[in-house]
Image (cartoon, rainbow, N blue to C red; front, top):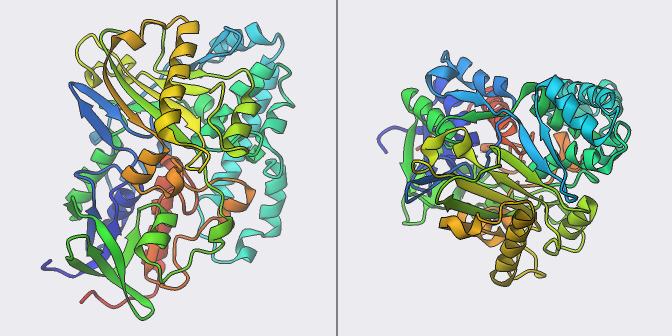
Length: 496
C-alpha cells in the first residue's frame, strides 16, 4: 500500500469498525482486513431468495452507547441509522402453556405479571431498581475503564460495590428474592443466555440485563441488525479508513518484541505500526500469533454455543411477536445439560425472532422470516452435530406445534442452519462458542483477557472475548477502551 499504516485492524466486526472510527478521527491511518466479503463479523447477513437474515445479534440495548460513537466524531446516529423500539419487548411461552407479554409499559406489565403471580408487581419494581443500580455501578466503575493492575480494579470502593450489586451471588438467587413463582424467576433471569451462561452461574449484577430491556427498551435498526455495521463502515470510510475484504490473515508477523503487521493467506504482507485484532481473542492467540501467550488459557471458561435455524416462510407466522421466548419445563436442567454434561438439551428452551414483524422489507411481500436460536454446548466430543442437529430441529418444531404453530414447518421455503461447528469454521470462534469467553465472576473486569498483549506491546484486542465483554453495546465500549489505550500508549515506530 502507498501509505504507511498506523493501525491495521484484523476483522470488520462491530468492535473493529468502531475502533477504526475512533482511531481515524484521532488522525491515524487505519486499514481493515477482513476475510468475509463485507463487514459485520457475527453481525452479518444471509441473503436468500428475497429473505434477509441477520446471522448473529438480534437484540440491541443501551441506545446511548450506540449514539456516543457517532457523537464522539461529530456525527448524529439518526443520519446513519433508524432505530425503532420493539413493542412489546417479547412474548414468553411457558412450558405449561401459559403466555406472558413483557413490555416497557408499566400498566400492561403489571397486568401480565399479576396474572401469573398475584402481588408480584411490587417485587418487579424492586427488582428493576436492583438492575438499575447494577447498570449504573457497572458503567461507572467497571466496564468503561481500562485496568492495568489488580490493585486498580480491586479498590476498597470497587469491592464495596461488588457486594452492593450482588456480584458475589447468582442471578437466580437474586431474582428469587422478589418472585415466588418459578415461571417469573425464569422469565426475569433467562436474559443471561445472551451472555451464553446460566442464571444459576451468572453474577447477580446481571439483573441489569432485564432492567435494560424492560426499562430502557429493546431497539431494532430498520434494515435489520446488519444495518448497524453498515452504518459504522460508512462512517469509517468518511473518516479515511480503508478496507480490504476477502483477505484472510494467515498470521500476525513478528520481529523481536514487536508485531510488524500481518501475512495474508495468499502470501501478501501488510506492515503497520500496530495490529488491533477483532478476531476472537483465543483464536488469535492459538492460530495467528503462537509466539504470544494467553494467560490462564487452559483454565478459561467458554460460553454456550447456539444451534441456529434461519427460516423463510410462505406467508405470515401468525401469533408470534418480533421477539419470542419458549422456556423449558426445567430451566436449570436445561443449563446443567449445556454446561455440566455437555449434552444437547432433552427439552430445549429457545428464542424465535420475527424481524419482518417490524420491518417487512426483510422478506418477500406478505412473508415472514424466522430466526431460531437454541442454546447448546460449545464444541465437545460428546456431540456429533451431523446427528444431533436434525434431532434438535425436530424438538423445536414439536414444541412449536404444541404451542399452536404447527403449520410453520410445512410453509418453509428457505432454510439455513448454523451449529457450533459452523460458528467455529465460519467465524473463527474458539470451540464454536457463539458468545466468546464466559462471564463468570473470574472472567470479568480485570480478570478478563486484556485488550493489550503482555509480550508484544503493539498488539491489541477488541471484541467480545476481551474487556469488558460480549453483546453489541459492550463490544462498542471495548472499541472505546482499546482506542483510549492505543492513543495513550507510547509512540511507536512508523510502519516500514
